[in-house]
Image (tube, rainbow, N blue to C red):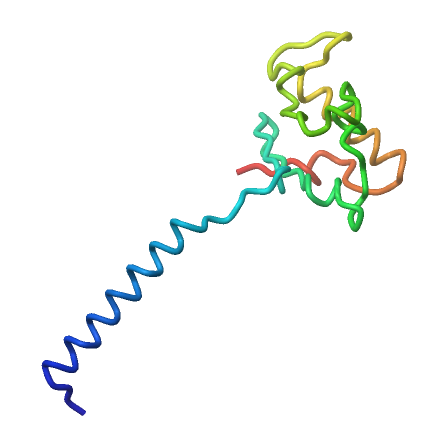
Length: 129
């Protein structure tokens, strides 16, 4: 089946017009990023650890409050919760302020042991790539 030159021009015109509308709509109505991170990737010497922040915080998941991990914040400050490295340095730490990996190990493994659920062995969290 052959199309006339006029029909092809009409089809190309519609295609270009729809493409322009699609690009303009995409630019005008971008999706909003989530208020809280969905997943967090921690890079470490022992391999990358992917933490499912969404599952831990949602009522349908584990239902943890922000303060259970962001332990220095009051409920009024939960919206300001930031990265672990805001307080815990990546390389150095001490008993008063452990480095990030020690703090995360203490927090995560402690919780997993307390509830008898979740990964407790190194290779269950750390993925070498």
